[in-house]
Amino acid sequence: MFNPKKEKENIIKFIQDYFDSNHLGGVVIGISGGKDSGVVAGLFTEALGADNVIGVTLPCHSKEDDKSDALLVSDYYGFKMIDIDLTDTFDTFKEKINQLGNFTKEKLKNSDINLKPRLRMASLYYMAALYTALTGKTYIVAGTGNKCEEYVGYFTKGGDSVSDIKVLADLTVDEVIAIGEELNVPKKVLYRAPDDGLSGMTDEEKLGVTYKDIAKYINGEELDEKVKQKIKTLHDNSGHKFNIPIYKK
Image 1 (tube, helix red, strand yellow):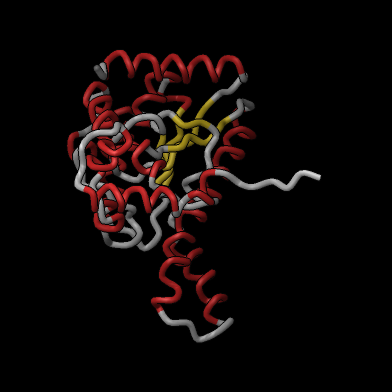
Image 2 (cartoon, helix red, strand yellow):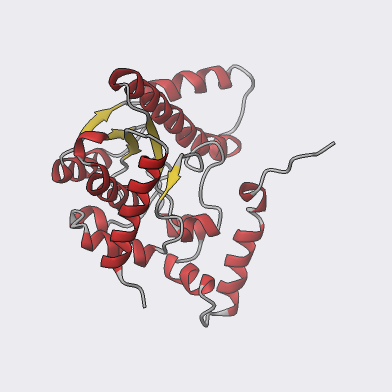
């Protein structure tokens, strides 16, 4: 039986032990205004103290609600929040791409969607290096993906797949929410319909399956055969994201 209070305590100890053993000083977290980054922020604030947590909002043709919801998290936990608007950076990159050829929006859609998390991750690592230099303490970047997302490959290689520590990657969406309740993550953030803030669609609309069904599939529970096949296909087609092949001489 999942015990969110105990699991929260275990994760906090996991963070503290890792930071102590590796002589680390702080963490940088991309705060999207969604439940995953809200829960990660709460866990690290309890583990390290608010003074050692840096939140970063990274809007890129984003909704204003994303930033205001992210501020609910930083205001509640009391950590520093930095805003780096990547819209102009994205647009400058796109201008260069448009000079290469007359591409349709449909052909560019997937590349555009995945460029945004890649720009965001580069920004988070920049801030981690900057705060390491400013404070003399080593800052690292925390990942925010959960088990359901990881299983079906709902992440961008070289983007939100990149981090130095993951604390939700073995937790389903419902388990993340349960821990969020223990952490008192602001309700608007914790129960917001998950979306990538990039495509204008919810996660479940993009995936074509619900996170509850993905959790059931992972746990071997009964599911409609079509849903099972959809989840299996998503997982199988994402194999290239899970392991990088290395030729050995």
